[in-house]
Length: 362
Image (cartoon, rainbow, N blue to C red; front, side, top):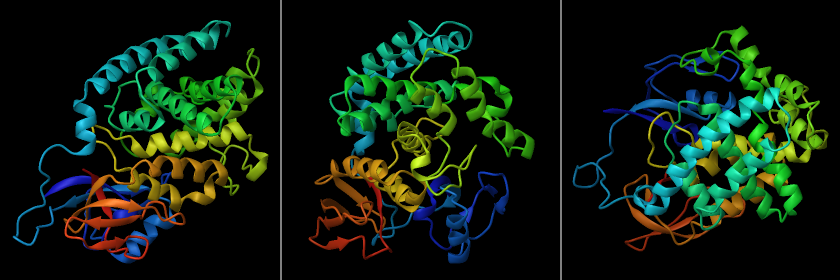
């Protein structure tokens, strides 16, 4: 028996929660040590709980033994590569420099500092082969103590990926990356103990966290910056259905660049763990994004999901029933659940068979 963080989409009746689960507004959904039922799992989905920690026991194979993979998994191979090690070292240095620049940014002139930040991003991008290679390496990164700074760097890198996929001009791409770098600058105005608090936030603490969008806009509004950078700081938690904050904007009321930052922001949040991680299965991440599709700009979200997942066609995967197979075809209407053909020749259309899901890439 061990504790594992499991996406809500992959929860099964009979699993047991290892900790209490709260909504984003700090309301209790379920207590710890609760046996999950279909009703409880649906409740978690209704409250937009992305993942919870549960006690699990490795499912046995036909011989009664736990499923084991021979050799390293896909993401373990990424972590063991020289490319990743160089990227990780470069990333650490960039985060340290970015921390200093971001703190100076609050009190100093923007000229030069933004250029320095953009140069750091370009240096990191130079350590990757292509956008999907970058996303793979970001999923394998370890946790940083200064999570706000590492997260902002990650969001900027993902914004670069999205901007390139949207065929943006270099000027617009630089603005978009700057949006990612500065979107959470308002968190510098919040007590660090609240930002890093491991347990449940009080209502007042959560209010402070939500105010980081307003604080960020106040910091940036008089700076010599593109207006879209300022709006991204203010609006990156607005949601397309009008249920975000701080202004409850909806649809086209939200600045386009802010909607891109929102997708990059949630992607990094979904792939972030609290320990050195083996890499989160991209199909699980896309499944969660599909479940929350009403919250984000549909054009940006669908393009990002499709381009992210199409690279994994012909990739070997481990299914939840213990069989290994290969992704052979994507379902355009359900990108997270492709067609998989196993080593034994069995074909599974996961968009029609919800009893089976992809556990990991191999």
